[in-house]
Image 1 (tube, one colour):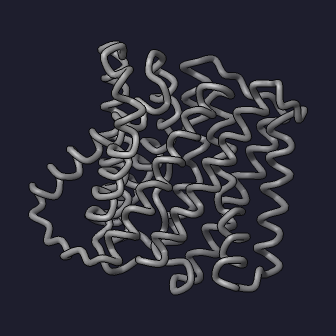
Image 2: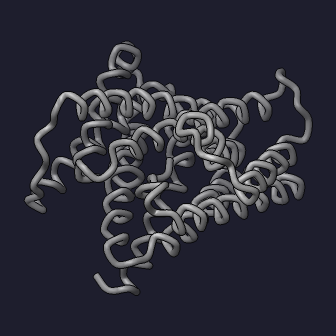
Length: 296
């Protein structure tokens, strides 16, 4: 893979991650628990197939690895469920922009959990995201779908931030694909009791959207991301993945006629700018941040 194809792979991966909310909304007859169970199951099958074809050598798991993968899987399950609830309640745009708050959560949590001093530019990141979120939701009313969807999306961002920090603590020992497969397996097992009663009622077309979600937005997107990082600098990858919310909102605009207001666009622009700023900070400090996390 050369630089040009790696850059193309990154954009395709960002597009697939951005389509997560769109596929989740298209699976109209499926509950968030069924969508997450199906996504994780199809992702496990696809990742297992890719690993078999690539003949990857995986590390033997020890007790610490198993505990970390279990915790990561539980956090990933909560992140996905809350994100798809946000999509169902508030729409793709609000869910995507609310989730995009996770870099601000990461800055705050790193300061608390790792006792790392929050620098001035990181504090500015938190402020930008906060202002952007206030613009995305015109009025804070718990009875409104927009506010409720945003709160679920913020929970999704918080859980993803905790997942990123969990993966940071164990980064470097396990291949990324191996960690992703095991965490998706944990997700599927966690959601099976909740999803099982309604599996028979899911329409065939919705299973197609869920399969695309698991294969393209999870397994393939993750694989493209990891492969491109072997050629592309982390800073460049971070900037490209800042386009993920843009892709998601644009497709939702075209498919569902979810037309964003000027206020929402302004808030989204601030949040995306904050994502870019956060990503550049992370790329400048590889020892502190560890590998970049995958998207939704």
